[in-house]
Image 1 (cartoon, rainbow, N blue to C red):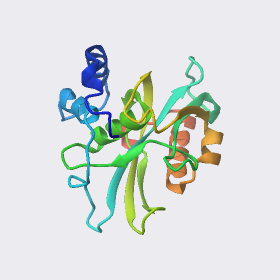
Image 2: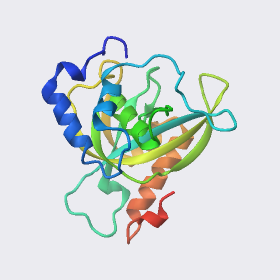
Image 3: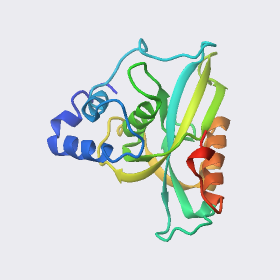
Length: 208
């Protein structure tokens, strides 16, 4: 994300806008909003704050950004009623959901929101976690532990830190299944779909 330093700070109205939106997120964030925005504004280097589990797996968090394709929300919602936001991989192979490393000075939810804002440029309401997966990196012979959250998108920004290196696209659930190369992300997507096809919806006791 080189060259993005001071991105949001150069646009005071945008900074205020991002702050006001983050204040409406449904999960309470222990990190002050100003600090969270600051973390997105200034690129970080290295992994000295990276979290690992007790097996040495790198902890990765992300979101599946989604929106409703219709305004009327019935009690029973099939997968065609929602669209998901995907981003291009840096190597150009496949479509992904935004994710990245969970660092020591932030909560899991804060990290997921930060990565989604950095990579996809969207904000919204983060919901209870979809699950946890262990997977092997395709680029390195190391293992990761991935955690994914749903994010009901409320706003798409015109500018975001990785705009110049990634494309974002709203797609159907079926297209996301076909073009996402990662099994663990597909499983997270299926969990999201499952929640939206339950007649009575999902309550907090059903969250993982």
